[in-house]
Length: 264
Image (cartoon, rainbow, N blue to C red; front, top):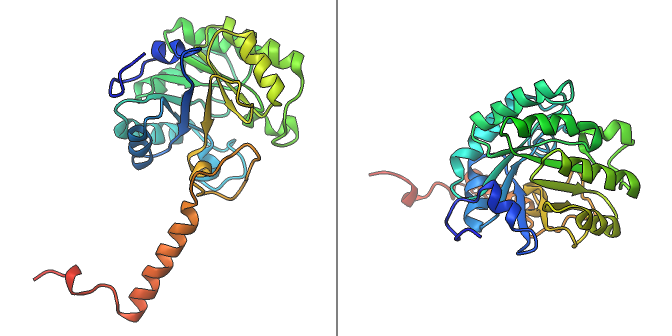
């Protein structure tokens, strides 16, 4: 495996399976990327979940390629070591494999090391086309947020036959890893056993080869949705609110700025 300060490559990430667990977080800007990278994450996912936690939409569907590229470039400037994976947003790859390659290529030109796209068997051709173009692909099956309307909401996916078929199709198409989202723990374990590429779980139990969480969720910065599978490692939202409230109070009472905050 790589040394602590050596950049992590796609082969490094793939080779971690069975050796150590992989820690992945989302990040959407320079500052969060700097922090995540310094903390030692294996990969940063520039996720289209920014549509919800950054832009304030109810789903990720409104996010455009231009917006994803903007956030990707910000993350790229803040990352020295972690593998950078960028989400292909809704309707940037579903139309045709050619469209998928074209947009995935834009992601690599903007600084990504790999792309992620949702869907199993039905997206196998798009994955294979990208892989043939030397674009590493991370798959994503189970609860796929871009399919929210077809699924009738953000619901746990329990069809074992479909999940296993999707996982095998993604692997056969050449993906180097696979996100498994919103499935029962037992199915997360079965999917992991059925493939030989790293599985990255989010609400898929502890048997996956790694885990991913949304930056705003794990830091307690977002309350729009609080999925059962999220562990909040801090409550920065409450701390930030208190800090800003204190600032407002000091401005209004004349405490800030004090003499030490001025120039002579």
